[in-house]
Image (cartoon, rainbow, N blue to C red; front, side, top):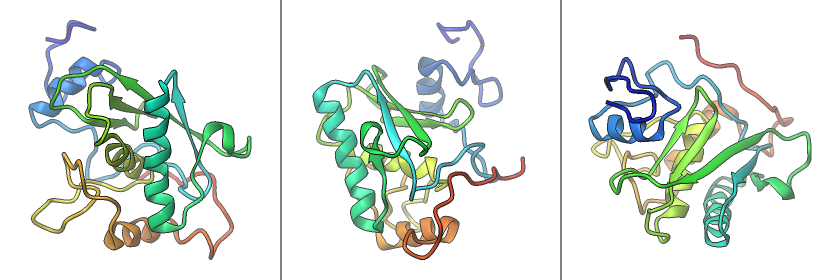
Length: 187
């Protein structure tokens, strides 16, 4: 039962605005993404990450997570204050959650959640992983390949295959005019 909304937690009835429920549902094996993709995605060549009320060490982790993608794929991601005003903002919130919960991209409400209790050393990779979801990347089974997008990943940074998957969706930043949105997959 969710403390936020008093609903029974199943994968079908998951109240997506309740982080406590999301944490429990993820621990139970539920996921908010499906084979059809995400409701909302962001162009990695023209997006800014907008942390909500983050402490200095949390902002450093967001910058480091952005740097992982920018370095691996030559993207142009930026923090909110460093980006042109017309770029869409990816909301990101640090919030206390259970220890086994790292992060979540809620594509229905268009916000990234990062567990504030997560060891700060792991935050940049978790942020980069969740940003991958905002770009439309899905989880990769560890037995398929090592990937930033492996569920529960805490140490693998974006690989060449992750970059190729990103470019398969969006193209490279150097070879195209920047788009600011991508149609959602049909549901």
